[in-house]
Amino acid sequence: MKKIKNIKSQYGDLLSKDARISAEMEIDSLISQMIGTFDCLLFRIIDKFHLSGIPPDRIEIDKVLSVLSAESKSIELANEIQKANQEGNWFWMIKHLRNYSMHGSLLSSDANLDVIPFFEQTLVRLREFIKTIKMKEPTLQ
Image (cartoon, rainbow, N blue to C red; front, top):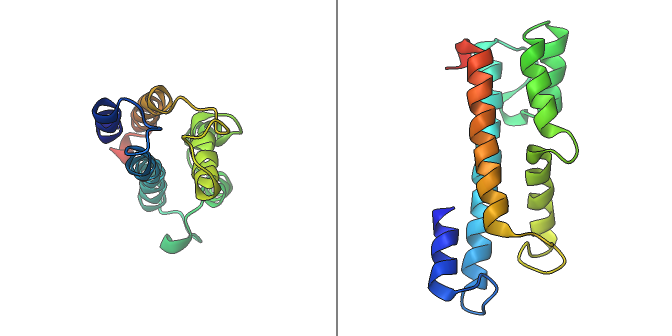
């Protein structure tokens, strides 16, 4: 986030000719880091709850939710993850933006996104999500 702000500060606008490529690379990197953080949490859940049937190279939200429910392990945890991933919620939006950025620019008028405030808010939501998960499931500390 800091790098994106620095680019805006240096060039005055993320859409400027000199800033755009760097800004888009940093935005893509930030999105990847957010998704990676969520994936790490899923991996930790699989490990701490000893969930079976999910190979480490095939970790997906739906699989984790399914196994958590099937093995009756922490339904409350599953609900928190499901809520974050529901259409329109913050994690669903991050995945949607990642997919969008593969084919278009998040800095275009088509994306209709005020990048810095959006990602600042999303980082806060990610931190709150992790804090909530750790409070509800102390084994994930």
